Length: 209
Image (cartoon, rainbow, N blue to C red):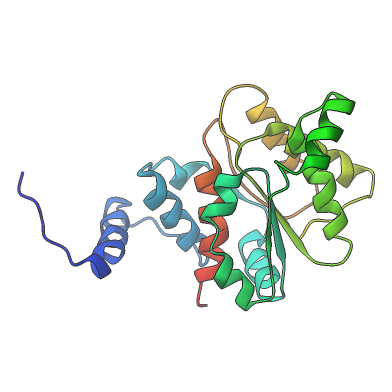
């Protein structure tokens, strides 16, 4: 098989053309389509064409929240690294990952829970002053704690991106979020990851509509 020479600046454009072609005419209303294509681009996994679940108007809610200065709270340094912080800053937002903070480590040990649980509680404090998008790419316990705070009336997130990956409580925690009356974007099933959580954030930031 011959290698096709593509200019560096044209690689992403060509990738999107291939993805669109291999979707065989399937489309979504924007900006859902941009989110779906970027998740496929990040993972080379066309399952995201079927497993991404959007609550009513979630994609537009997310875009508007970002443009209104939403902060993004994530459970992993990898997701935080993958989110375009300079672009988010243009809208007045910031990215937060508390997973290695000393107070988080200490509280998790004292309470016998995961650090991701404590991170969500710190994110809820930010949500008192700013719209917050929670982008979860690893820990089901983060989604569980978000659901608990929502049920208790302690948190009203702008959007939850529920994309933990794996086998233990992953599917169940995603279902918890999809059962709540909050905007969400969730790759149903076991797939997801920090790269997908970051990609969904970036897709909403880059959308020009």
